[in-house]
Image (cartoon, rainbow, N blue to C red; front, side):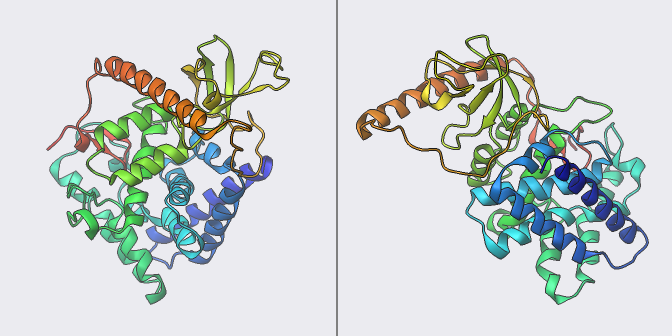
Length: 359
């Protein structure tokens, strides 16, 4: 999309601003405009991941507004990874846009609070899914499904969510998708009182702190679809060279295709892109910068071709080698990460993006 993407995001912000005003003034919400925006998200993600990079790049604006847009985008991306298509994928995108509209009825001072929430304040915030449900229900029977998703977006698989402490399969899968990307977006978003996490840091935090609050298949889809190293991320390789993640290998989240920033050729290949899934001795050493819009050129989504002329037995052995190397790398990283204090799963409040002491 280029400049068109930026314009689309601004249009979405404007539409969600009108939504916020409608909720605050107790008027009917403009679902027709949101339906069109949901269609835009689905259509765009079928072709490339440009919107994903936009969502992960930390767009400026109202945190509540950008969160709704980002959850619609990232939730749709995860839905694609889970096999969603057609009407259900469109519904998932639309639900992302409205999943937290009840927060517009909550005082801004409470949402922005950085310290420990009192029991009364936490209870007030935990009412917002029900408030959102009531708003959407007024749109008529055709949107009853959307009202239910809005009510369940903060329920958790282990029963530690709200407002009704539902457990397991009592919760819609769509609501759980919205929940996990809502937490992910809170982690990668800038806040006045803490730095934003890089996407790979947010993924690790989710896998540690939220592993019991969301089904394994949804966490797996998030890792595969958003990648440990999302498109547009600037990285340093073990060779010392710096490049930008240009493509994601869903089978090997730790081994994307990297476009080299400082040279046009790599070992005489005639290409400035390195597919790390085919180079077991080269890997990513560190992330230098989060995704940046405009750093990469987008092309239509396609499946990477298999290694030409390589026997299946050899390819399978190569795959096992990659997985073993990545397992070793992850083990070493966990040792490093274990030196840090891990926050309890209940400490993360996706609505404020802050960590609070447990009750």
